[in-house]
Length: 341
Image: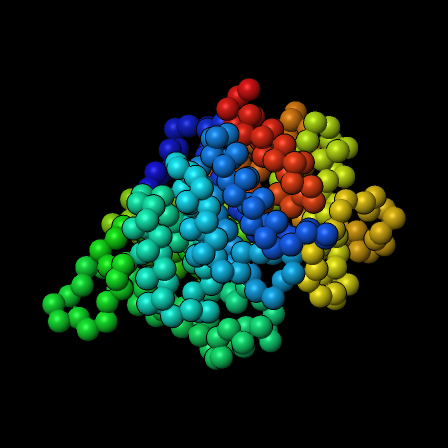
């Protein structure tokens, strides 16, 4: 794991950029279309120099096709060759630690040195779906114990150990903790693990959680210094106006949540002034205020401010764009800026 370098000014071009993909299913398309698009995006972002390609576990959401996250990671890793591929994240309380150790042990055995295991403790769904997944919602309270069990399965088997993860045991798979508050931040610090924060939907807690991680960090066999990756919604286009228009698909998602609606497929962009009230506009903009959109010049300024504010060692970018070609173009522009071109 690369550690942070305090002697280098952190800005676009000095901080690695990665991709967070929710495998978005747009209106008029299918999950199969979304998964094909994900592989295509991964192949392009690998070529454009992005560091990681992470997929997130969500359930019962018609607009997200990555529910079987480990399967999709295998799909992406099999179609790429150098980019790291992982979970952002696997919701550990939804699963047996043994099953996760076996799944990611299999992935690491197939694609050695390229697999990341990011872990969260939220269900990645509504309460009813969480019940269908977990049967017992108390599992989230035992996250630390489940994490200990997972580490046990990844360790070399002890003499006489009766339950083993095969594949899995003895493999060096980087484990990250993910969070949208300070619980996992403190735990990641105490365990000396890298930490990824979901600033893209929890901007209020970004700086407190990062502070909690740094202040609680203890060097470990995994890291000698803290390492943070911060998530951000980001869309780049040739003009500010085009980027803002493309971002309306994401704004409609959050507007639907504010209105109490059920999860839906990704909607095409619209003029948001014809859709939301002033109250709804303020509520959506508050939730998405850390988002970065704009032309290359505008985007560069905003991203540099975000990196300077968070002091992130790495930034992972989620781009919810309706049209796949426009989404590719957004990541291409961002990749070009990171290379200084």
